[in-house]
Amino acid sequence: MAGVNAPANKADDAQVICSARGCRADALWVLAWNNPKLHTPERRKTWVACEEHREHLSQFLGMRGFLKDVVPLDEWRAAHPGEEEQQRRTP
Image (cartoon, rainbow, N blue to C red; front, side):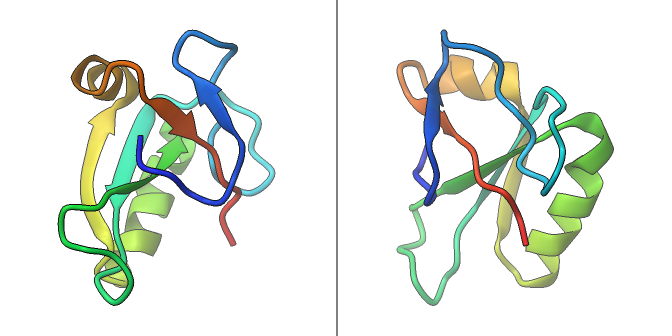
């Protein structure tokens, strides 16, 4: 996945943890985004979310015009083999 400022897990490694601050749940969703003031249109940064935080994180990114796509983690992995999930704690 596109990078963010945080450690990464390889797709075959241990669980991927939700990016929401304080959450330790397994991530089920990938939120692909970019900041058009900083990134080229094709660049995608990612957050990962559990079911509970998917809507909140999507709204956070969407209100800023950053959210580009929300995809189940398994589908993202299938479409992006060999890439790493990035984890970042949100504000």
